[in-house]
Image 1: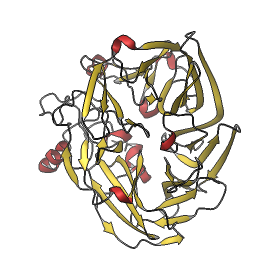
Image 2 (image 1 turned 120 degrees about the vertical axis):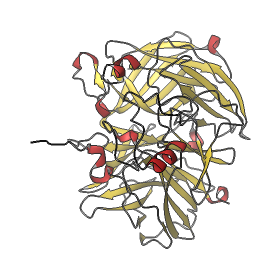
Image 3 (image 1 turned 135 degrees about the horizontal axis):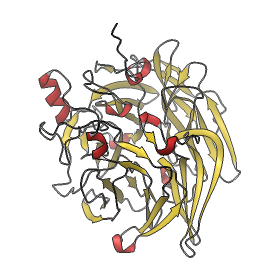
Length: 469
């Protein structure tokens, strides 16, 4: 008897939706704030065709789900990101590429500027220089039109883009500059760092020397520095070609954090060594006297998405909020756990990015849930009072990252709303949840019911109304 195993990332609310729809006048329980006006857009994987190899959550084609809010009303639309690879697969009527942890087919034509892996554009988005860009860290961005979410095409900064483009660029709220980097896994240089002017011109790219390829999913900035994380989640094409996992977390290898003056180059970077760990997402970083302070969702190692761990390390691999301090004078590194509750997908008031922040928000991980990255609540941290609040989504209800939207003309750092998609596994329906960011223990301000299921996804963005026209 032959049995087949269906990937958990193709089941339940990980399963894709195939229909692209547009719906006005959504049903709302509660009342949307009159001064909440703009568009929430969330990116995520949504496979168009059945996979041809082992399927992971991050393998699927990018799909944007957008809820536009104005005058207390809401509308919804979802659109595939029309990447070159997706168009080629639609023409073929089937999947052509395997996921990035599988051996690539070098006979296929490149679908991006930077190698044989499929650019899905499925991870996050950034608004900068008057453009919305959909991002996947292994290739170039895709420009997206607003508010219709139609794909304009790949974007390479008038041919100046010399590297892959991280899914987590940082836009300085005061200078308007955007910092990004690209890491490579198949050829050198393994790390390049770039700066884009407030007007959207790519003005600088420098190579940062690192000895071997690693998965570098996120980084951080302060007012004057950029922080790179060289963590021991290594990539090996040789392992792929042997049929083994592309990635291996090497728990016997130290972590290194590189601190670079924002406009410096490789000769200016300083590396600090810390205990072996992995960080998918940083919360924020800032300067405090002689120290650089980094707040992040840190784990002792990672086995998520079937990543192997050297020596079968049994330490807890669930991310928890940590504070790391790097002393620029003495070279000392200090780490402290801020909570023992597992959480990830952090957010904050982006007006405090790179500056000391009092508040941060994370998605609380459900216990005993598989596959990885199931979230059943939201957490608010107050770093001044060393306290936290929790908003439980309810029995059978799961969500993900919540985006902070500041109230227009507000003064308090936490004066605004948290917005996220929630899936109710009992009703098999999705909704947009709007919470008062100043009091997560309160009932939702509004629940906006979505006319079709919204699969679990990655990162969202809020685009104010003024940027939509």
